[in-house]
Image (cartoon, rainbow, N blue to C red; front, top):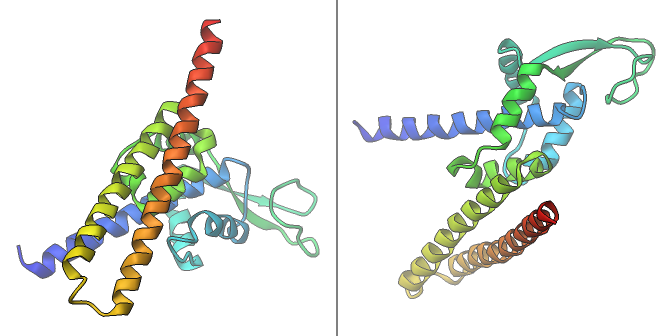
Length: 210
């Protein structure tokens, strides 16, 4: 396999995973009720914003894909019909997107899956946004997987800085220090979350056996 072909496959894999994450994030947002495209994009930006720039050019193809699979449906609403969409001027109808039964099932399956996809930056952000709908044991598994991934990142950064300390300029070194500080901070934060989740599990178990 040529290097260019290998790079193409890696790029395709990354883009496919990003598309999958966006699709499930859309399903999760629609789980709270129908939304039109503008409001949906604003809410997705809140969840995925730190990890990607979401444009209508990527959102609407995503909506078409999951609509074709029967996971969402379009609903025409007017100002007189209650919805989560912002108020309309005049009496124009507006198309909003609503979750179907199949879409609800697909989202529930995704939100309770713990695997490498859920540990990467964007996937973790999406899963964390819907932890309220995730089983307790799965939450702990995702948090532990994310912590393991960050600990690997910390070890790699430290080793890289140790090797390159004499060969890189001050600005590169500061950038590496910044990345290390962020990763170490997140590991501490994850430790706190995992501890909290385990305490909740202990309380729930004690309550069930009382």
